[in-house]
Length: 291
Picture 1 (cartoon, rainbow, N blue to C red):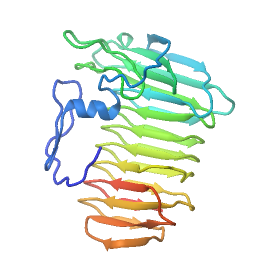
Picture 2 (picture 1 turned 60 degrees about the horizontal axis):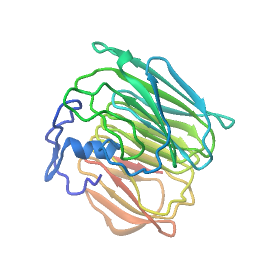
Picture 3 (picture 1 turned 180 degrees about the vertical axis):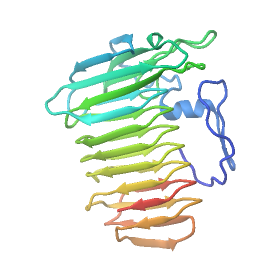
Picture 4 (picture 1 turned 90 degrees about the vertical axis):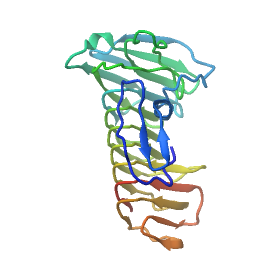
């Protein structure tokens, strides 16, 4: 999700209605764009989807294994996603559902097996007249809550070498003390990451704090938000081309790097180490710090 040439945030996000609009200067994103950003656009990019199982989200628990290098993906709507390190080779996924008005027992956790690993989704009752809600990995699946206020909080115990993907709309994503590659996305929530592996994070209304131990990435890496700051702890041996931009905030680096064009009031470009894939840091209302 690109935020370049963004000027002023006019409308905040709302989830559960028919239309969701963020207007930031010349940039307008509809609900479908946000759903695609979170992987809820109804596409079917995974042709090898296997077994699909589901059960109530109240006191949900599942344990099992995936191969090193495969992924465990969590897709929520309302609620947090928390990844923690686990010794051994077993993954444990738990979820708790609660609500003020709606019935928590109507929300199901669906587990989908596919060629990349496992995907777990909080699947809400399908609103009348809408496409059937269903869980799918990546950019597949369909989700619509329609004013259902059930909050599902996930906790995932992850062994070394298993990639984690955390996606939610209204909630925080945490992945602390891991030995895995981490991909985290939210709309309304902070993101906090600490891993010996690679990391990437995007949110809209929230700050990002990330520490990654691996600089072994082969393509561009993005950390982005609209309303929030970015605090990034990078490995000492990183080789990347830095591209940082902000509107209302500042930039600070504890890492020496070769400037390209200097630092302006709203952007900084330079070379970290020997240079390499682009490291893109973007915010509108917030500061950026790398160390």
